[in-house]
Length: 503
Image (cartoon, rainbow, N blue to C red):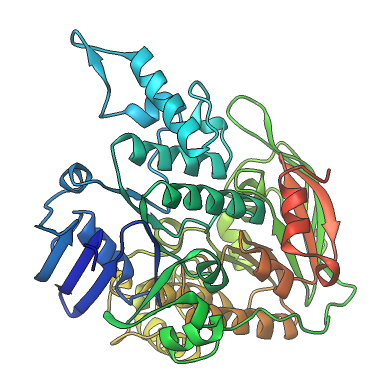
C-alpha cells in the first residue's frame, strides 16, 4: 500500500463546552481530490485548521508523507508542503498579482528583491498549470475567479504539494466553477493532492475522488462518489434528504412595496458603483438579484437600508419617499435586513442571544417599554425566536459565538421575521451553512412570502435564486442588464449575463 499524502488518526479538539473533533480519522491518498463534507459545527474547519497549523489537536496523530508532524504554525505546514486557500481571500487589493504572490517569500539577489526572478517564476507556474494570470494587474481590478487563481498560485509558489481549499465555489458563477475544476484536475494530473470543504453536494460528486463525511465532530463515512448520490450524502450528513429551493405558485399582488427609481451611488472617486438602477418588489414577491460580487449588489442593499449616500434617484416604500430617512427610521418602518456577513453586521458574537435578538429592533416592543429596554420582554421574545426557528442552543444566555454558523444564521433570520417586516432585504441568506440549516431558511422565506412579505434576495447560489425567486434581475457593472423568468432560466444562462457574455 502506498504511503498516503496525509493521514490523521484519532484527532480530538476540545473547546470550552464543545468537542469540535472527536476521534476523527482522515486518510488522503497522494494525487487525489478528497472532499470533506458535513453540517456546520461538524468539525470540518477545525480539522483543516489543525492540519494547517492554525490550531493544535488535544489528542491524535498527524502524518504527512508518512512522517509524523505536529505543526504549531501555518509556516511549519508550508515547510512540509501544505498550503491553504481560505474562503475569504487573503490578498492585498492595492498590490499587484506579482506582489501578492511573492509577499513574504520574495526571491532576493544581493540583499534586494529580485523582481525579474519573481516574474519569471510566476509566469512559469502559470504556464505550467494552465492558470491564466497577469503579474502586473492590481488585485482590486480582478474578478472573483481570478482572485482565487491568484490564491492558488500563491500557495503553489511556496512549494505546496497538498492544497486545502475552504468552500472554493461559494462565490463563483457556474462558468468559473468549471474553470476552477479544470485547474484542480490539472493540479491532480501533476501529482498534487487536494483537500476541499464544500456544501454543494452535486459539485462534490462531480470533482472528488473520495469523500469523507463528518457529523457532530466524528468521521461517519468515507465513500466513493461513484457509489453514492447527493441524497445519500445528505442523509449521512444530517439524517435527512437533500433539500431543494423548489419554486412555489406565485402569490404576489399588484401592490408595489418597494420601488427603486434611477438609483445611483458614487464611490470615493465619483465613479458610479450603482448606475441608474430601477426595479419593483411587489407584496408577496421574491425578486432575486444575481451578479458576480462587486457589481453593485452591495451598494443597492446599502442604499435601500440607508447605509450609504445616494447620488440620485428615488426609493419608495409603499409609495412613500424614504430616500432621506436615517437607517433607524427605515428599520422602524418595517425594512428587515439579513446581512451578507452575519459576524460583522448581523451579530455581537460575544453577547448573549437575548441581546442579539434586539439588534435593529431595540426601540420597539417587546424589546422596549417607552424609552427603556425591556429585559423581560427581550428574553421572552428571544425564547420564542429560538423555538420557532429551531435555533439549537443550550439557552438564550449563550453567546452567539458558541453557535454553529447555521444556528447563528437562523437567529438572524428569526429576529428579522419576528418583527413582521413589510420588506426583507436578504443578502446571501444561506452562504456557508449546511443543507439542514439551508432547508430551514428556505422554508422560512417561502412561508413569509405566502404571508405577503416583499423580499429582495441577493445570492451567489444560482440554484437558490432560480428556486426561490418570482423574478430575477442581473446586475453587471452597477446596472441591471437583464430581467429573467426563473421558470425558463438555468444557472448557465444566468452566468452568461453575469459575466457579460450574453449582453
